[in-house]
Length: 172
Image (cartoon, rainbow, N blue to C red; front, side, top):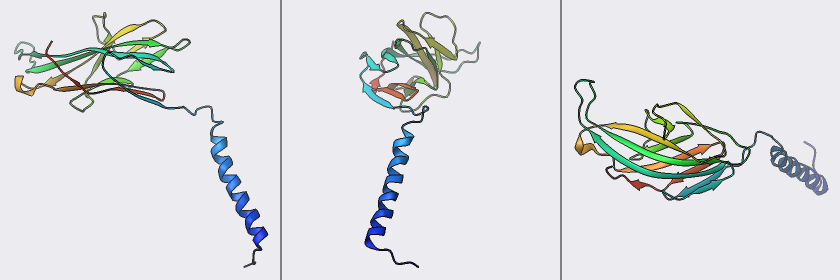
């Protein structure tokens, strides 16, 4: 093995540091790189982000007794509205994987998302530059003693993550 002089050692270690530094700098040139934003807001507080605004409002639970005709068990209906506006030049394609509610610390497997004034559920809502109200809802199977207690709203879309503080659910 060749003995390195102090000068050669410093030159080689300097080149290695430069190469490592340039790797980090060049990764900033990647056009697919997304800057992430995380916010925690209160219910009824507007969260402003680079993609638009969101405000979670009007959250409640309602108990439905068993319906033997339609074979529906006793269950709780949980609902939350979100007022959303896309930033200028943006169109947001939101679904239950980008906008949801967590009930008692869990994301429901079955959750509906629709415009608040729409009679039908959908799997996706498109939001442009006007403010719209989106209805997020799910059911929790169980009797009157199995009432869901806490709710949190979540938006996770293209590097923007907005969560609400945990809200106590109240009956409608």
